[in-house]
Image (cartoon, rainbow, N blue to C red; front, side, top):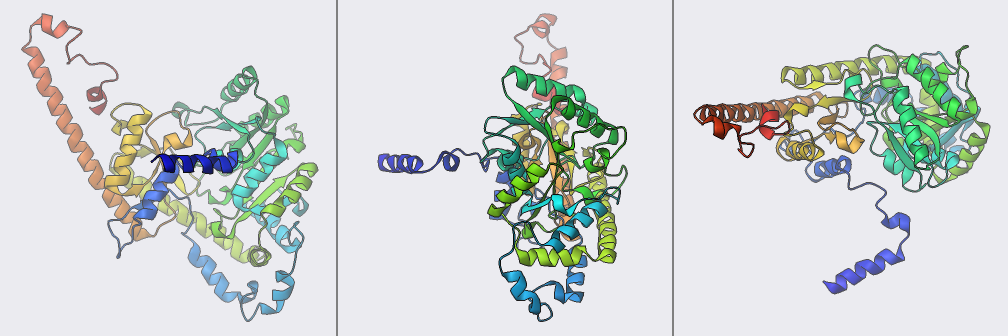
Length: 485
């Protein structure tokens, strides 16, 4: 044992602080749920009792549309007989600015996904290896180690990895509450900013995820205007992560920060505004690793392009994407149909849970919703939330993500992803939840019967016995029996 310990110690000393500091966050329940799925993945025929993956925000509902387009446009790929004539030009070295056709097509697509209300300049587009690479790159451009960004809670767990791990910056939570539907308030922003100032932490910006992951909601126009006022007043950056822009499937519509700063009555230093985008969610292409930084600050664009050398998008992918996104008829049809399918799946699943007595935050965007299981907690603590989460993973065999991994300040909320599975798998998931809820109701019923029985015994006690503060039957606000009933 001593030899093993010494060996581990020596290995630690041989590696860098980044390699050994655990900043990747793999020990989070968010990633632990994925591991549970990987170890026992559900398959309708081969492993019907396996874990169903409901912790991955992946959009598979419109893949058939993409496949059909690919079959009818073989020239889009340089790896087909029809497209091989362009193989040499695409395979040779390309400038890290990106293929002009690619940047033009992405700029046009970004405008479409925002309702055609704004026009994006291809010269302000920087490509990166996925949204992860884009988020880290913009962080490197804007902040030094020890400086901080404000982030409204609950927020995407991997932001802790993407923005902090290698850059050394901090993320400071802006607390949003369920009593206000987790909406962002200027009061909360100012409180977080003031707390950072008192702690001598320099705040360099605000990171806003809109539409929100994990809430599945959009930020309203008035709040966006207030946020622009806030960042201008304090001369800090605003990074808007808009990777779910085209997943909005019902009212209210998505409003991009790009639209807000175009308004006549909005005063804004545009050098402070930056947008993160990707094709991972809107088009369902996470494996293509197409991340985008769109900055109104030319110095940031220049710096980010140099940094993009470490995580470029392959020219083969750029060529294919440029061809697809330039097909206006297909893209218009895809966005419309994808929205319809997301709405349908969201309605089926949330209605199904509602019939079982499970509520969720009202949402209209994203590939997930924010499920409310607070009433199933034995007590309102993170420990109770983790106990319930382990039960869902182990007994129900569903990987849903606990709110604590999203830095939610209220235990009992869970993110449920609904677009990464077929209809049959979704039906299995609903059946499992139904069985689980029946068991929970039986448990709660038994607890109430037990409670009623004890109340009967109390009536037979003397007043002196009932009034004793040391009696085990005295109920407190935190008693498991109180919260179970």
